[in-house]
Length: 418
Image 1: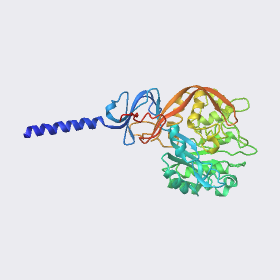
Image 2 (image 1 turned 120 degrees about the vertical axis):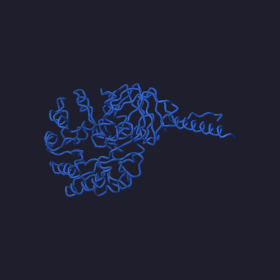
Image 3 (image 1 turned 30 degrees about the vertical axis):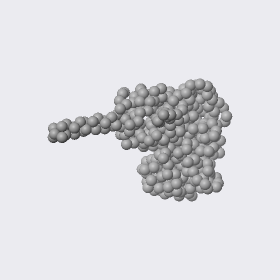
Image 4 (image 1 turned 90 degrees about the vertical axis):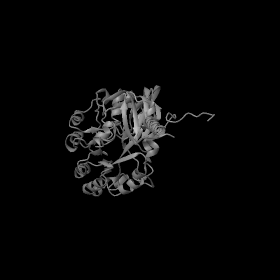
């Protein structure tokens, strides 16, 4: 073979190889989907490319031949992986331990990806005494990204007298464990304390301060007489702290909507000073008597969340998309619902690497459909409203990997002759 011929052959092989590499530039490409990304103010049909678990390109049109796998999302919504800011996933087998390493909590992977959720925040199931067990047992062994609020009670949410023990509410030790696990602990938590006493709340907030100014999530357990909601929201909590179960009406705790159907003035004032309000639906913390008047008066939640556990998943709450669908049918726009289930939770827990699809971000992506029909949505007292829209998850990516595919839209169609 002549040298010139051999040289030309090498050039052809090189150029062909470059073209092939160019055609396989991305691992995965989502095409034709309506992208909703609140952080980047995107609300339009866009293509999204993924490489090595990260978002690699977001453009109006990306050629199919640039990716190894192409997913057609026409007629569907492409959104950041959802963030459920209130769950209980310290699942274990201990008897009579309520939510802390027991049966009432749930293993996260079975209740996340199928609903488009890629990140959950456990709401205080563990405290400083047993967080190490929670981390080794659940956080480090889940595909779902599990973050946590650390309970001010050392043993966490084991129920009963354990959660009433002031001697076990140690802000210094709570802060130490939070700092030691700052990669996954995003805040502190108070729950279920019953008594006319601000001490548990003050220690929870103090722990957050000692841990570097992380937010406190507060769920007042109730007292007789009731502790002042105005004092709580305008004096005790800091801007950035979270008022849990905002649409609840439980004994011993003042509801946000008064007996005349009006959102209390102190609630509006609290929002102005930066107090955050999250749904935390749960098995007993979401009532239409609170939510519907509040929505009518423009008081929508800062974060949509489930309070997932065995007592809520088989009742009115069901799952993240069902809770989001309720708000969609109560008048919120789809854009607002998505924002409060992705970017805003990420922002409020200081995890701004999550909740958006910027180039370089984690490729945590949910592809959602909006089904139209006749649907019923119940609250925790058995009241039902009817709606005509319901969200359904077609596909979920976790760091670029398909972890849920309802109808096989990421798969190759079977052919009998192959």
